[in-house]
Image (tube, rainbow, N blue to C red; front, side):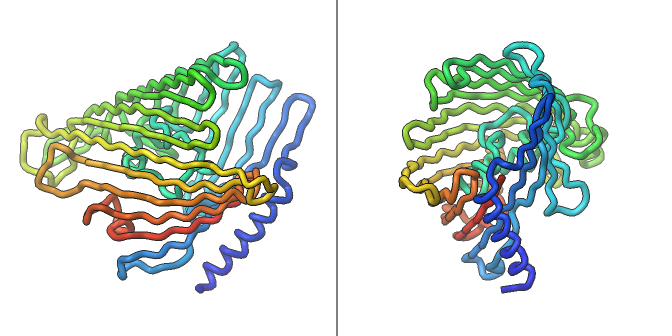
Length: 360
């Protein structure tokens, strides 16, 4: 074991103990609101069938942040990634709740797009995002961005019955100055007819590529795209099911694809993922829940191109063990690649991942 890995494991052990012992006491209440310190550490061990990749420990996420509210009307969220070089600012937004059933948010936040991207990294049922989500995040379609969002919500009993969201974003990504002459417009709807059953979908119209980008001598890199998704999620009496279909089309293709008319450059991406798990309550305070889970994922980044084999199909078998109620957990994943190609070299062969998480 390397010295770096040993240091990270020691930090992880301390964080895990702090998560189990302190829990929610890191909240300071005052006369006009409250402030909560939050943190997240995820360290994982990877074992790869590809001999060119080195087995070993590494950090997935190290986050520190603060959230709170003032007068129960103004909420704020600030979070940094301290495991990256440069500007590690993640979330930085403020939400106003002066109007009943309506929230107004401004700052850097996630676009209200795909379901999995909006799932907190503390609650992800797998160590890695599904490949369609990875594709959308890497292209800044469903990642963090700077903008404004309005959310309309109606509550029924102890859950939210309907959620409608709409926002406008720079389209240039997090911690990046605006490089577009058009904005990304995002709409999302979520209906929960009964508690634990959600039907959702979203539509995005935006621009792909930087303003003035030249491709093969033609300024055609800044072109519109459309993204859409629809799915179903069930979290009821231990059953954990999610299925989501995601698609995108745009007239922009990167250089090197072929010498064709720039106005005919286009691609249609589509993919889907579905997972099924069952949460078993052990009846103990610690190690209170065990969840066996499996996922199938499919991605065709360019369905119009039948020459390049870029199809990705993966099966992930996993086990989630909740250490305590404050999101301290152990995750085990075995990823089976059904194609020789894949979204990244680390998935070119079968992979075993084990991740330990501590959060507060």
